[in-house]
Image 1 (cartoon, protein in one colour):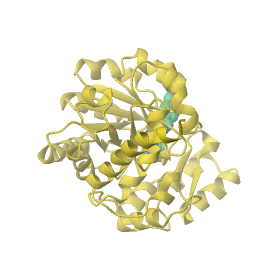
Image 2: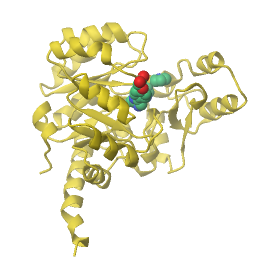
Image 3: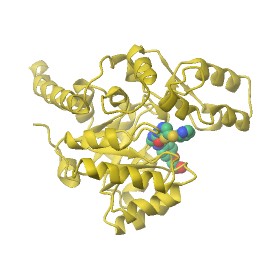
Image 4: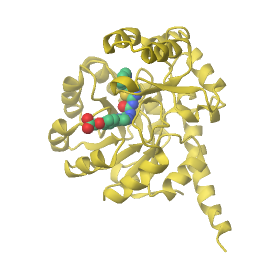
Length: 314
Ligand code: TUI
């Protein structure tokens, strides 16, 4: 059995989080992962508090195990969602795409365990000082909004810089990846891309098929020009976005092009106009499975890898 202190801290059985993927990570997927013993996470993304409340209630109908809500800090509704998670006494809040410092006192006062996603040592240290329970160190291999450092470089540097548990994210989709993260000093992993094709994931069938067909070189990071890089599949939409970015399009123009693109991919399966956020590890994701099977394959695979790793030590 692979158990680390984060399991006891959060009351989960297996040290694996499901990433809070915008327009994708809803009550259906999150409840399945929590039921399987990991930490399921509802993505608040750009939704308002009413939508998030409804998802929390739907999840609580399906499981009484711990779960998280991912508060996307660039959302126009971040303030009202921040109030809502405290009101609902959500067990764990994970944050993304910014610095959650201004909300942390209130969340901690509401007995919420706060786990910010960080892409640098600096933010990790700041989050520890602000009272974070743990951090997720997310490498640039991830899908969606990303930082610059790779998982391999980021995770051990964050582990050395803080005393709180570190979860690793970015480029991890099987037992080998999880074992490697543990060797870097992480207490567990957060996985997004592999859960995209989980049976309980309500994303469009087109999205799942595109992830299943993806190869190692199928993703691209766009948006660097204006400081918000986002990784997604190479598609007509992302090719057009990258082309306009290279030609020097204004931030406004690019924002207009991107409006609604996540919804078009996730809900409508619109290959032409959608933005199919997905990590570099998509090439290794080849089969649809129940979320519980994915959890067990990753954690079970890591146990096996870690046990066998000593065979090289003479
Ligand atoms: O948040 C994510 N991934 C996301 S959020 C998202 S929704 C979105 N849609 C369009 C544009 C932007 C976002 C899709 N994917 N991952 C966690 C994450 N956080 N990765 C990197 C960061 C990060 C980066 C810089 C966190 C903090 C930061 O700077 C903090 C500061 O000091 O302001």
